[in-house]
Amino acid sequence: MPTHLRTVPGLSTNKVILENVPEGTMQDTVMLFLENCDKPRERGPQHIIKGHKDGQYMVVYSESMDLQKLTGNIEQEKLNEQYIKTKLVTSTNCIQIRGNIKSLSNDAIRLNMESFKRSKGGEVTLVQRCGDKVALIHFAECYVAERVVQTWSEKDFVINKIPTKVGFYYHCLFNDH
Image (cartoon, rainbow, N blue to C red; front, top):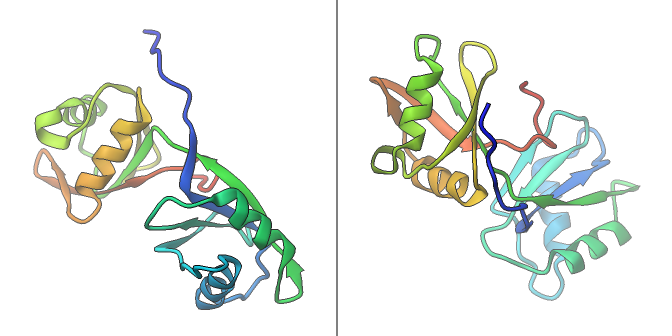
């Protein structure tokens, strides 16, 4: 098996993990809570993504921000009588594709993802199957995963006439493998 050298992923400047969010809390309530914790600008997140653990969410902002300050503010406030825990997130080199991909070979997936012309991708280090409808693709570098998701998150990525949805995969948030 070849050895792949890659840079150490840095911390994200626009994503944070929330833990201990009380069960039954609406996402709108979480959004308002986060806006109030971002003093004085009161920016709300662009996305809130539920994790596989109870009370776990990834919060994604549309711009870079001082997450150390924000997480400090979050941990000092209560949401529905509970303190929220936060974790900073490292960038990921992994994406997931979802679709009816059972008939696609790992080589077909890898070759399409390595083709800059087709996918804006680059060197793939691993393709992992998670059943018939999900595959995880690991790139040698995080910036390649970012470029692929940025290019394909709003439209289908077609591999051998099979449409797929593309998104980031964070091992700390999901449990698909």
